[in-house]
Length: 329
Image (cartoon, rainbow, N blue to C red; front, side):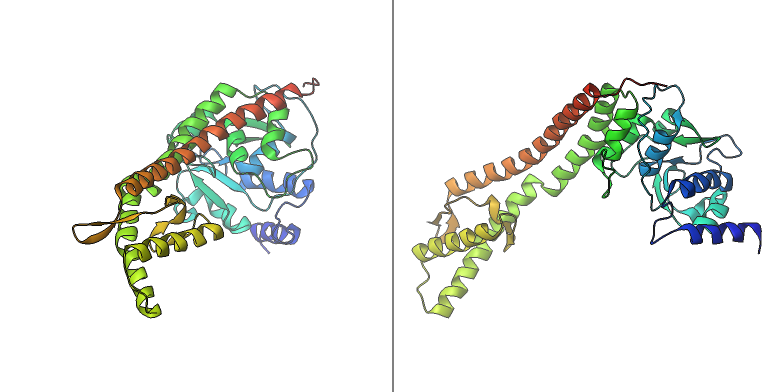
């Protein structure tokens, strides 16, 4: 058996139920092996990748980040199910020849481009190249994202099985002094801004308003006509108003987010009013205005939620910093 086949066999043998680093021994060996098989700095002197997410946090907690004050809390180890490759030049291992030996031994792992982490988006391609941290651990130097980026990434995308002492983001904040100003700048630029754009695209006012009008002025009316025909009831203005309001009210009780005949029921006014206009049944101007306000309020509330998350982040940061231990390396 060749040396690389032996390494692959070792990796398989020491992985348990999809957890490739179940204990500190396998973590120590495999992280060291990873950067030997695929150096983080390539032959041209450029950064090929950083170790991010939970693995990056683990390295920072167990090792020493150069130039950073460490509080030495000695948190217990947390197992890891994969390597997390950040700041990669490509999003496919097939396009990264330097990673050939790494992928042969460890298989395909999570990989993120220079412009994104799991929780942050629209990063300048040079940002992580110019802000990365060096961690001294296990006799080696590992490269991870800047601690403020790593903290925010893990704060936004927390692990499903955290340590009893807290999630990765909180432990990182307990272990090192992080810049709140920098965290908030990253939060605004690479979380709030992209999320706000996404909200505006998904909940586009004109699109939602036009779809709602089509639903109320066409689909709901046709639905009522079909109902009246089946029940042998006269289709008129009174029947229409009763039918549509009853239908929307019943669905609101089930879930306000339900989409009925092309309209989200939570957007509908509590009292939908139809009038006769130019010989046609249409929703009243008052109903239209309430509909507009409801759509605007929905978008505003989602944007406000992002701002609320920002305030909560500040509260968490301040609370953790007040309780930091004073033992420093």
